[in-house]
Amino acid sequence: MGRLFGTDGVRGRANDDLTPELAMAVAAAAARTLGALDRSHPPIAVVGRDPRASGEMLEAAVVAGLASTGAIVMRVGVIPTPGVAYLIGALGADLGVMVSASHNPMPDNGIKIFAAGGQKLPDGVEDAIERTVASGLSTERPVGPLVGRVQDVRDAVDAYVTHLVEAAPNPLTGVKVVVDCANGAAAAVAPEVYRRAGAEVIAIHAEPDGLNINDGCGSTHPDALVAAVQAHGADLGIAHDGDADRCLAVTADGAIIDGDHIMAILAIAMREAGTLTDDTLVATVMSNLGLRIAMAEHGITLVETKVGDRYVLEALTAGGFAIGGEQSGHIVLPAFASTGDGVLTGVNLMARMAATGKSLADLAGVMTQLPQVLVNVRVGDRASASNAPAVASAVHEASAQLGEEGRILLRPSGTEPFVRVMVEARTAELASSIAEQVAGVVRQVSSV
Image 1: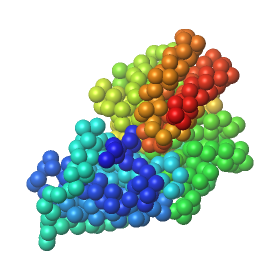
Image 2 (image 1 turned 135 degrees about the horizontal axis):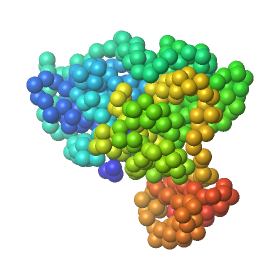
Image 3 (image 1 turned 180 degrees about the vertical axis):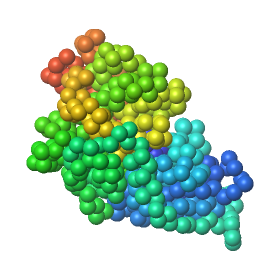
Image 4 (image 1 turned 30 degrees about the vertical axis):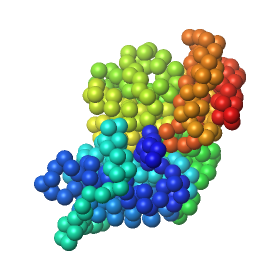
């Protein structure tokens, strides 16, 4: 068995490589691993999902796997991933499982597991779960009254919405926003949160049918949001992905504002308010060089991590820092959430606009983004392609060509069959040229 966990849980094509049998086994293994810390009561597990059709099937398998170990399952229905993380703490659960493939297309699905307190799992715990799955779950199972029970938490979404509204640092009065819910889990939460926090809200792609999640909409397809912002004369647009753990934005004139810009805006606001611990922001190696320059100009230290919000979370926890995130729009505010929360991010971004009276374009002007090109190369074996000597040589030559005015980063995707080649340079033309050169070498070694 190859490694099950990628950078964000177990993910694959639903009912193909991610089968109900595998979902059941992973859930049972998670309950045995995470519930073993306290034998005074059966493990309590929160289970949620995004609205994709296969989620109904996989949720049933996850619930069955958890209950088969004796766990008490608290099913919360369709809700954003950070909602599951929040409810684990609010309900005093030992673990949680979210059935979602985030921004991936509808045929895919995934299983995200959280420990007590809504925390992402460290590598060692994931390894322990994988070993338990590989062992065939031969441990004796509970029977009779010891079999786990299942209950639906009817007010789960309302509790999460209230939590987000109360997290707003100030009312969103005077802000008109178009929110793209990606026909995903955000539809059940984001428009209500933004309205109750004080904004005027126009919701689009907020009618999930199980098949249309992320389909030409949401944070991976912002064109429709740009058009809607301009058509409605809105102050900004907010784009979420399928499970609403990320947030991107659009200015009134249609410019895309990514996670780097949002982190810069929020970090500066927090420094002014005295809530930015050690004047430090945590970001991944994928963040633009422009973010590093802007933070230095504002007296803010940037701590860098590997790609993946779990690594951002580890750095935040280790340093006790107040904000961190990714260019993709996964942003973590530990005072209010244990994981990236797109709706929480949207609330704080609009609160900054309302408090300052500035447009999103003006706020985003604190950072100048260097031209960045990302090429995704489809490969058969991500590890062998990214570690090939010819690829290493091409990356070395590209680094020398860029010098101190740019950089290149090559890494295998943790969730998809791609090697990602990212180049930043002083001009878009140079970045594109070098990215294509290196991508060509990756394609050559992958086709051998």
